[in-house]
Length: 314
Image (cartoon, rainbow, N blue to C red; front, side):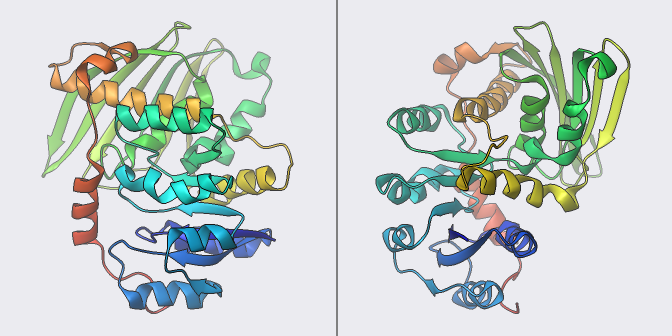
């Protein structure tokens, strides 16, 4: 049984992951460290619900007692601090989406993995069954992808990264530049559109929607036809966790290198930079100059202020 240490149970993911892990019977949470906004009663409820062995007093104590760390905190600017004790002990870490939110942290991730750290992540949508089933079809049948369109909701980066990672699964890497196309809005909610051009000549158009949950919907235009599918969110966690368990058990997995995950972050950073530049196309190579970022601490403040109790009564 794979022993998982949970760090900061900010979101619903620890609950959803824990339930999926129970069904799978291959891994379980055994300890938790939490220094975020959830109250003691909620941490205690999480411990009761999944039969954890203990609440740890430090990240180091948690890292000592588990095989892998799961970083669940919603402040992506804090992810690498939380992961460091696991790196120090040569243990892998799953970092929940978004991996990081600025170029400096992207470089730090590259440095860490270059020195042997193992980082797994991030979006469950990248590994969803619908994409896997689509890619399993012979290319002679589905055609060569020419253009991809994807949608996501709730917010710009925390949820928007899901659909960009889906594009990574379908198109691979090689994004060249990103162009902000504009905003549509009604009733206090708004949708923003971005265009991504790849070195291969393929392209990706994605919409983020702020203020309302929207399904992850994908349209793939190929040299044969147009494929349309909506991703079943009820199956997402298991699809991801199966791949993590495969990796931990030494079996073949679909987990991608950190460089692929970082390209998704850089795509969204270039999109933010293009928006700030009134829609001028911004190449990923330009990010060194323009230095855009998504503020994880500010997101944590707004998320924690709006979050209701989730774990206390489990």
